[in-house]
Amino acid sequence: MITSDPRHSGEITDLPAAIDFFTRAAAYCARVRSSLSEADAQVRQHTEDIPGIAMLVETARTVLAGLGFTGGAVARILDSAHERLTSLSASARQLDQVLRTATEAVASLEDGMLVMAALFHGQTGAAEQLAAQPERAQLTAFYREPAAAAPEPAQRPHTDHTDYDGAPGAVAAARALRQAYHDGFTPWRALHGGIHATSVTLGRLADGTAAVLKRVNPDEAEDPDEVENDYLGGLVATALGIDRVAVARLDENTTLARFLDGDTGTQRCARAENIGGAAGELAELERLTRLRHGREIGLLDFLSNNLDRNDGNFLVDGGTVRPIDHGSCIFGTMRGHDPEDGEEMYSPFARAHLHRHGDVIPDNTIAPAVPSADLHCPFTGAELARHRANLARLEPEFAACGALAKHEFVMRQLDTIATANRRTHAPVSS
Image 1: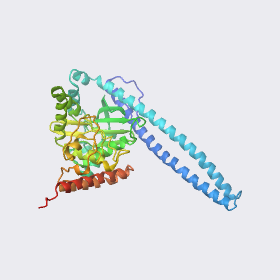
Image 2: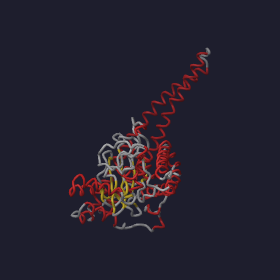
Image 3: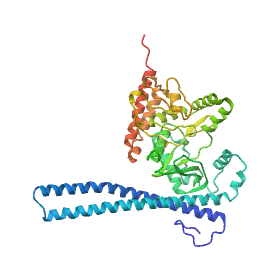
Image 4: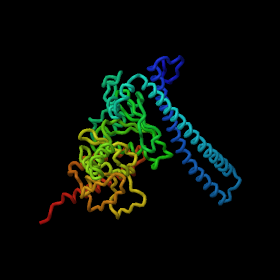
């Protein structure tokens, strides 16, 4: 019997026992890694505080020396305090490095456990049965296959985000995902991830939901806030009414999102290009931006200034398109951008819906700034008011991440769209 810590005293003689052991071991590593990350964050905070205290002590020493108090009891106390603070600062930096190294080591061990669990899981027969089918068929079969031991719905909140609406639902969806992960995550197979992802793993949560676990290497990410941005982007997307796209932030390097069925935009555009060349590809991209949720994705990308809504970062399922991977939502302007040049707009969805001329451009093309006079608002006044109320309610969650400035940027961007709305719907003078 494998205990939760997860030691195992006997020989593992069958595949289910092996899968159970490595899954529990990965979950155990995840808890240890989370605790180490929290401890490291506290140490870093104290490391930043100590120099400030030392500066106060040094100032007091200088004042006393200026007044002629040198060598007295108070001066000796301050000298001793300064020496101890200096030593403590050095020790804190060393502890910070030790905790970081330990966190990375446990993360690597967790990855190894996930890989081993996935390897043994693949030997049970499910992988072999699907091996001859296309990639999408494999993922679809896994996505729709019911869990063998899924609990009754009343026992655990389900992570289907369809019923969530507005800001409270956005936060609840992320929390439900995070709770479901801690209840149990069974890895199935590795997926191809972004260029900064250390690992991307498709697996099943304890409630039967298929989910994607992604870990980012902060040393290789272009933006150190990539994981935070991914989480906040999921909040904004869900608050805008896009279903099933919540993102849970498990720690500063790891996110979890529900697995979504469908084709990537890359697949759809590649087929169109094979038939109609570059013109066919561009026509297909424009068509995809007009599907259900396309308008909301455009607003999401404008509010967060998403720099990378390439055709691999959205999925098409029937008549619905949904965004994935919000790590490049910078929630601010690019360095060196001059507001006088107009609004930054890199997303084809934003350009399709918020540009007066519907100026969709090909993927990987540098997008020129859009003059404010060319901004278009496709939302009614009532829709904007609802979006404003839902986005305003996200402020506490942004604040909890230390990202109030990012929330303020979202609301300013919404003000810009509201101005375009008044201009778009202004009465014509006779």
